[in-house]
Amino acid sequence: MDSQKKYPRHFSCEFFPPKTEAGAANLVTVQAQLERINPDFFSVTFGAGGSTRDKTMEAVVAIQRSGRQAAPHLSCVASTKDSIRKVLRSYQEQGVAKIVALRGDMPSGMLSAGEFRYANELVEFIRAETGDHFEIHVAAYPEVHPQAGNGEDDLINFKRKVDAGANAAITQYFYTAEAYFAFIDACEKQGIDLPIIPGIMPINNYTQLSRFSEMCGAEIPRWLRKRLEAFGDDRESIQALGIEVVSELCQRLLDHGAPGLHFYTMNQSAPTLRIFDNLHSD
Image 1 (cartoon, rainbow, N blue to C red):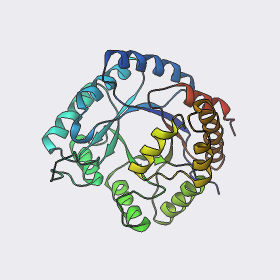
Image 2: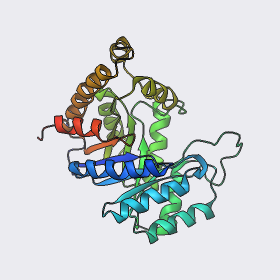
Image 3: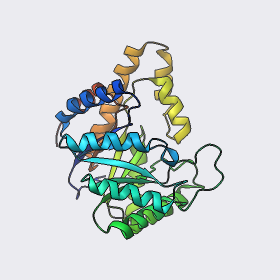
Image 4: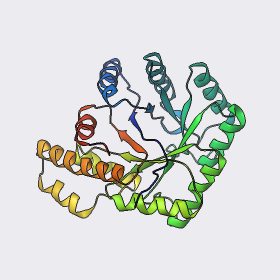
């Protein structure tokens, strides 16, 4: 199995927008530390209905001014075309050339999705408004989106985003390499031709990871869950096992042709750097 061998290899890191001055200062430090892996870009998340829009913009501007490329997330659910148009214009003015286009989650209490229902509609709108200015990344789900009826429906939805003009995809995190390989095979059979970059979540806090995984539908394999649970509150042992397991996962993905790795850093540098330092080149 040699998946995605034709694509150049890139690494990238994801941040969430800090809410405080201390958090912003920490992010500057974390970004500087992560420069060692020479990331292609730093992505910045975006809350449902634009709830963190201003903070996302602030983080994006700071990254751009540092000389690195920022890739802001842009979620469209509960948004209007006019509001998305204004955000796109602002990003263009800041020299942003990459966007992660997502549907996003419906804000609590809202009954209508607004003017966009699905991410492919957002991709189409970005292309219609800005042409080829942005390199558009979209989400992919090797273990199937939690709201999809089945894997076939999920693949059809993914292909809609690709056909709408996506340039690349970043996957939800996973801990079973076979899920990624099977997804790539399924995409190739559908004629889907773009780099699909594995999303990597370091294991730093098992309680937090378990909660995230329940919400987003990412599977923690039973064997891994049992080993992590056995450590109880022993954070050091949890982190050590996490580094070992995720490093092996990353190495296997790269050895079989994954076109890079996208690290969900949780605004920390140490776990990502330790994993990266464990990797060897082809």
